[in-house]
Length: 481
Image (tube, rainbow, N blue to C red; front, side, top):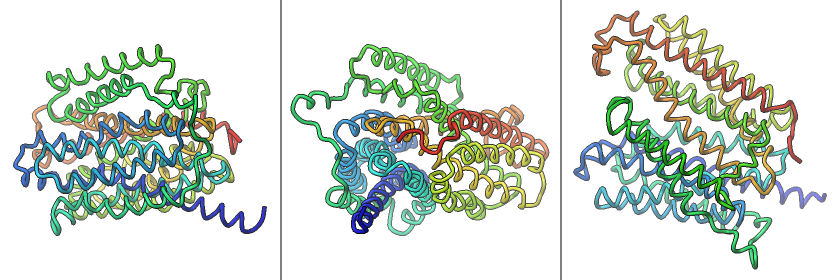
């Protein structure tokens, strides 16, 4: 291979990573940037908090509900095409949200933004699997994962700064320059898709709309029930009805899929037990991170006595370390395989959380800071190699479907992790304590014990992820050529 060809391939790989990283960054950023600005949005538009909840859920539900469909569509017509449409829709709907005159228009814009986010989510990792050779996928996924972490780290502070200085509308308008820049790269500088659909194969492009609708309704009902359960009570009629409806629609989705000649979910991928185990590890790790992210702010404020600003600064230890470690772990997975990184990372997380439960009541900040650093190393070591393994275990024509499954399980694990950690925490508190504002009145030993129960559960979830990672890796460097 000539030097010019190698240089051209390297430049093309960098453009793929740049576009995929922008997609991952914007997806995660818009899932978190709205939360801190919601009081300003609700006040400015003159609506109540229930409407504000739908401003958040409209995005997360359509994002999770469409990612499978767009992953499969990307396998049919090419990653570049779906990513191009995703950037156009995401950027255009961000403009609509930023200019929305009413809450109804804003919710509609968030629905469209979620659909565009589904396109970008399905292709951000899929593009790495499709356009980069297997021996460079770990490096690419590491950078994309770091971009996701950067979006999560900047979401809350950026939302607060923009809301206070420029107004809440800029939390959406800030997407325009990034979206247009990435759209240009994908449209004019991206590699051509390896295959196009034409002639007699054009009929196979279609995605079953009934399956998509059933999956969106099922996920929407489940996510709404899980998100409202801690606040309204798990046995309250709205929450219980929402969860049961979600289960019913999910069963209907499975029946529809089994009878469909062209199902939305590629069930053949799960015939490989390593693929199944790697995705289960991804699901448990999503629960772990969401649970820890829920518990730690409350722990730092109510047990360690920190203020909100200091709490935010301490939490940066986790995301900052993860941003630094993730690209390095991705590159290492290309050289030494994934078993040591994925299994070792989750063993480190489980062990660190278990030891921390014995030190949680100490007044010193050394233990929580060290734990956050260890968790950043553990998660950074785990995620890129795990995602690389999932993509490498899928066939070349199934990169979009594999990416869709990966993202869907990640999105499902987050609310379940928060719900589990919250349930264990509240179960350890006296029944008379109904609101967070009364936690300060509790004896410190009693409050610390409740948090210890939450961290023990997170350690158990990390151990489950470690077991799944061990069975998924098989020790090989590249499962598929």
